[in-house]
Amino acid sequence: MISMLPNRQVIRVGEIEIGGRQPVFIAGPCAVESRGQLWRIAAGVKQAGAHILRGGIFKPRTSVHSFQGVGAKSEREAVEALGWLKDAGQAFAMPTITEVRCESHIALVAPYSDILQIGARNMYNQDLLVAVARQGKPILFKRHFGATLEEFLSFAEYITDAGNADIILCERGILSFGKGQAFARYTPDIVAVPILQRLSRFPVVVDPSHATGRRNLVFPMSCAAIAAGACGLMIEVHYAPAEALSDGEQMITPDEFAEVVRVCRLIHAQLPA
Ligand code: PEP
Ligand code: MN
Image 1: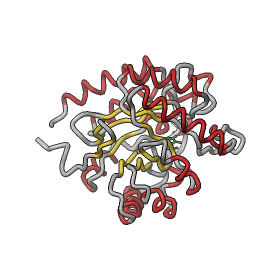
Image 2: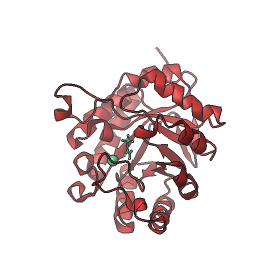
Image 3: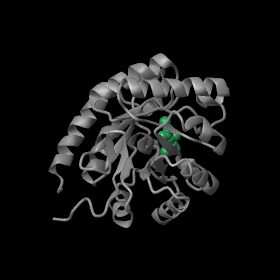
Image 4: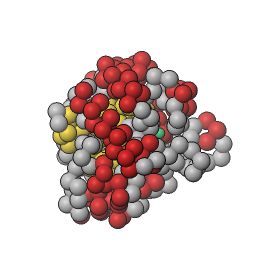
């Protein structure tokens, strides 16, 4: 039987192991909107089985007219929202993750986030990669939607070269063609999971939320990712997706997330050790 764990590096964040024997679930809202919103979602995802709390404070958006994240309003509001994230993480015993969109965010975000996220659009931003790497915190590194696997791994080397080997690779969907976007925003590149895990030592997680952009596709693509050997999933969750200020169409509820966790654990238990 082929082992799913060749020489995989295990990344420890507090009590949590990413790349270890059990799949890791990262969950939370697309964007942090208020203390109450984050608190309620943190409680829900924790109860459903999440290990790590996500929440965007600086949002990368396609349109300048879309909500840019609480952090974009002012530094004071960014720090306040970062405090909500840290507090909710501590209250529900979950390490935290949020995105750093540019170099000026790094010093602001680092004291509040256990893992720093590099968004898909910044995969090619070598100066940002080097600067984030120097913080010494684990990095969740998202693949650009137009990047080849060679490019993805090549840009990960900017992080290792800057002295940080704690990289979690995240497959988040690649561009589709023809009418593809009518059905799913991107195409989850599931085959990238076993390939990246063979070509590198880094644990690979999948983000089925951004990869599909459709809430009804999150469950099947989560199952597919775990069956393909992913070390974990990052999923956007909201108690009232229709009210969300960003990505409402792809967020699932805490109950739906609990079902994803339950079934993915069953699938994972059937895989070779
Ligand atoms: C996110 O995870 O919040 C996000 C914006 O994803 P991506 O960078 O993959 O679009
Ligand atoms: Mn989102």
